[in-house]
Image 1 (cartoon, one colour):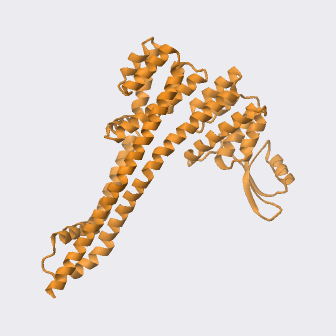
Image 2: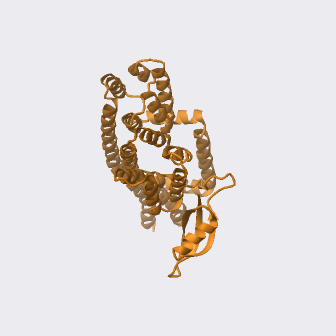
Image 3: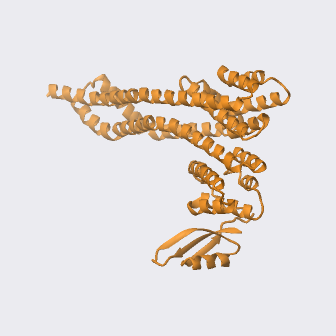
Length: 402
């Protein structure tokens, strides 16, 4: 089967767009006509190489949320005894866009005899390796619904942690952007004509006004140059970050930043702990779980540490020694890995570690936000007050002169 994009008109003369799964364009047209649609255009969602056309501008954040929801719904339907093809049809029917196309491709491959994990592996840019391997374990052990439920819980916890940190930073970032834009507007559009009139009235301007005038003149005369320098600097930083060496330096620096660094470490360790614990609970061995955790993390410091950790435990080295030599994990995490491995409850202890670090990150981010908000407001108030002082002082002096 193939997936087709179509445009048509329904019985209410309303234009309808969507996707449909069929063997041929004619079959797709017949299906749409049976549904009461008058088909205008229909195109196969394939490229010349035969792969589904998934744009590079896929909203991956939205896709992650949809996939986490779909995994939970799929587990629920399989547990209720619904066949997997009907379950995938149900999920595809209630979604639109790229996610619908991806689910329809999964459905077509499963219908043609492929396993679900093999179908997921055909779209590595969308479905992560941890999902693929957990589904494989569930299919091999006959506990796919249980494994999918574990995967859904893991995905939701990941999203919850990411959303809590993002939400905490939204308001401070808004204040910074708004304050910067307001200051630039005042310095370039409001102050110059006002200061020009005051200079004709007063021979010597007050020092706050001189500072404001200097900043205003700099922005007016060299603003384009400063903007170009900022753009070039950001471009150089982005180009450096795209290299493996640049990413390693950047991530190392982030982990050493005061206040934010410890939060990033705990967030990274929490994510890794959740990945490994979820994989261990689904029946994947530790070395494979560490490998998948390495592939799922984006931080180069943790990625390098996990790679070395996996190589050392594969060579028979003790878990505690192998993890502590990386230097990237806090002593508590090293101790939890060691005790958990010795007691046979590594997955349970890693979940507890992840919960503990999640709470600490949430608390720290909330405190940081609570501290940043009044500080940023005070900074903005001081900047606006300085500009008002720089404007009012010469006006008062001009009144005294007159």
